[in-house]
Length: 586
Image (tube, helix red, strand yellow):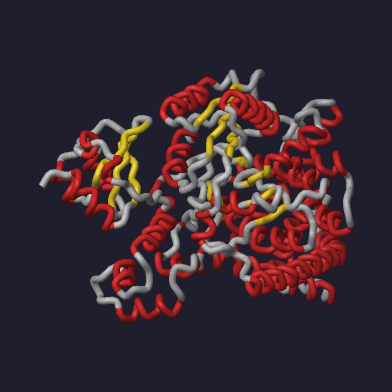
């Protein structure tokens, strides 16, 4: 059979009309949400609903349990607990970490953490894994109940996290503050910043930024259910107890691959109050690495599409009000929209190539409208990404769109194949493993806000005070010290801001509470030169107070004098002067 370009042109021409209809229909749908998002943003800024930082930190701390389900995460769980324990400013929390009997490397790592940290507890599932993530979470929940009975305590908030999560130092404070009114509070989730050459990870940066800038606030404002993101979700205990009482003590649905989305829907249908913290709240987000390779991304997104679009449709249909149904439609339209978007990219490239060679394609007016929506959608996404990650990453959105469409299309096709094959064979869908990595401290450094911006955002100083300080500051002076000298901020508030910026706990240490032997565990000359005072030894850690931010070189130097793990906490210069005068030899 002889190949014919004319035949291909005919097929392409036949596809242009239905593709144009879909692009315009989907574009109008997205435009509606964009407009609603703009209205929600303006309304939120006019209401100025946020509490002050002092009000946030001054709220009585409820006991919070952090549930971390694991399968083959021995390589990352240790660093996750260590780094987050050092960064979290909240005190009333415990990690409950679940693993399987046939995952000995992960069990071994958790047991080491249990010995080192008093707030870390292991749950061993009663059967081999992997099952579903929800099944592991349910066994962790049972272990929490047993822990409460043994220690006569009750955790008022339960929070879910994964082994690769970098928690914001104030996240637990925000969840604690709003858990008095809301049954579920969701902290935004963002991918960590990576180089421009990390194309696959860049797709996650694009998708998450647009979705959490637009969809999540709008669906909350419209009264639809707020899906949990799986990490950074705080549940009020009473709400989870109600779910458990209705579903045979299963807080998390064990047959679901996306138990997070399922729980958000179940709570929404039950009338629970849900809240999504907007992205503009002082950089508040749980950050993590996502897959860097196309195959791993397709595998992860296949699980997401299977759970969100297919399992939930199968289990719940189209329940709820008209608003709920609308958002269920938006969550599921990717089953068709993702392959269509990829097909649109292919046809666009074909039409462009044929036009270059002088072959005119049909001029269909509907396609002009489709082209408008496609360009508008691209610009909108670039603006969202630019606000979080900067101009350079935003400009590369155009290059990442075809890759994003390929990944989402492949995931949609594989999800349908996997789901219907499991249905046909009467087999359960199990936890699909995604390789995880935990970021180094150097990788986290670019995520911090500038000190002046952070102090303004948290209400410590005004924009006018910051501008005046920047103009009047001598060239070699540090901004924070200059603000204190000008009377714009007191020393205690400045160090609260530094603590928030660098994710290092800030405290006040009374000299009378420090054992002299601990204070002299470092050579006096080294301690004075670096403005440090050791003040506590706990769980294999030497906790050191100082008014300066620790550098990697300082950490390396101090390791020569102690075999203990070193942990820093910030104190004000005044507090340091008291400590050094009372505890360090002249």
